[in-house]
Image (cartoon, rainbow, N blue to C red; front, side, top):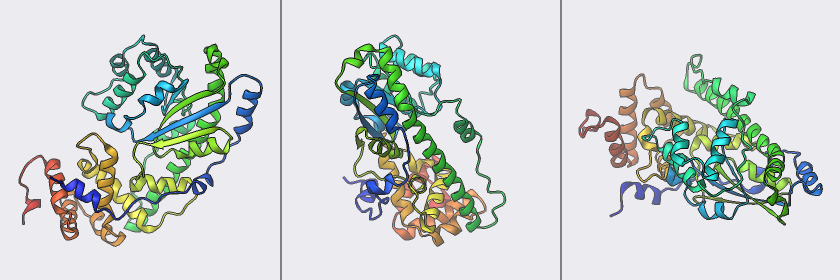
Length: 357
């Protein structure tokens, strides 16, 4: 029997705007091509091919699908924002089979009730005992950009109306986009030195006619792929789900990242998504472990609201008023059965005054 979630997805008329390759390339600037070419000409690394697997990474289900490609890779490079040498050493010990995946998660103080724990564990299980040389090109914990990100907060205290709130929020997203751009540029700049070091540490790699590098990255980081292509590196990419649909906030950040405008409707929906994630996180929690499906469903719910419809809901004085306005609105939109089910999970009881007919 077709469930409410499946009906919502099937009837979804609204998708995130797809960027063409030329659109994304406009926002990618790097000068690392000469660095890579120099390393190849000097015989320090073989000609390099990079294969990138893009996906969400909130749950184990999100990252499934890269196992065979990991087996065929000469080098594995995972996304690892905020890493340090100890973390890199631990991952390499897992690859060598000298540390079990569960030991790694214990070091990270992973919480078994957190879906991300399962994602980290699954990735470690796929890596365990493969003896794959492993490197990291992401921003380390010591990076000034990462330090700034950790300290940054969004301050709405001086925003007295919806328009000012959106302006403050969009300024925050522009900062996010700038950070991600710098982060991706760091990845590209770090690739050559990391590969050179790995080839030195694993001399057998220098004998290969071509070096096959496999990366796993979050789906928003397509700038890395385009940077590689612009840099003359043979690169291929695939997504866990195609066509891929980003949430509104990620879409807005990506538009800023690639020099595209963010209109009022997208801004309002992205902000509404942020508010719902805080007040109604169950809307974004996957029942089957696939957060990409949940993102699509949440996007479908949010997509039926215009900027003017979002304004009075987000201007609610308290949570009860917010949920009351939200439920009234989704009932008019024909989405009440599904959202009612989500709200019941949120309040953890079958009956609530919010659901009175």
